[in-house]
Image (cartoon, rainbow, N blue to C red; front, top):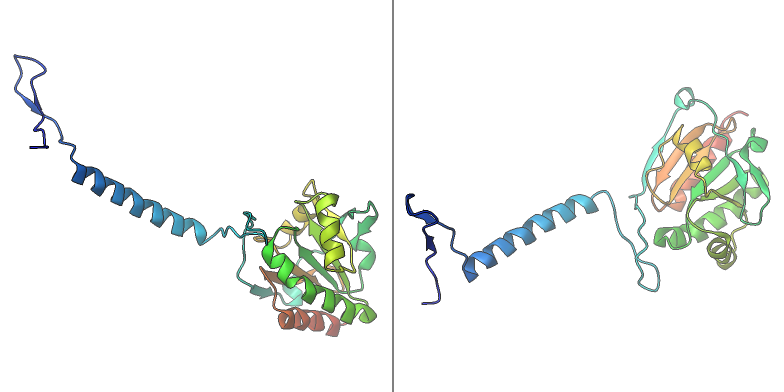
Length: 219
């Protein structure tokens, strides 16, 4: 027989002690159980964190949103948001200079798949609303200029992005509205207060509806 019934007598004055028998079937059962537990834990993680991939198949490691839209009535918008920093060319950016106009803020980084997908919609909206004084600004706390600027050129981004290496811009946003995913898009009203937020890849129609709502309000 292949099975060994493991009885041992560690001390002649004590009764025999039976030890667990390790069989091939037992090992297989434990391995199956471990696999099930791991699968359950993985499902629990992916409900909050989604590991995407870049175009070449590399792990992107972004936290993905589901396009959830939130908006606030004027009385519930709190204090204005002001983002200050430098873009990837070294020029100063200060959204405080745009008070009185509508502002759209978009968080992104170059290897983020939904950021790449939504970029043409952001570019189109920025161009279409430029004549109405709507300002667009990106926030990128992940890339250096070597990664960010090729992205901006490739997608012909017509607006600057804050190089937020120290997290100052994101911290200013977090103080008013949680930024729970990349990308996240935030629309500020004419006073610089948060009117709306889209978590994850934006729907272009929804973005335009938020902008139109902000423009319709009195300065």
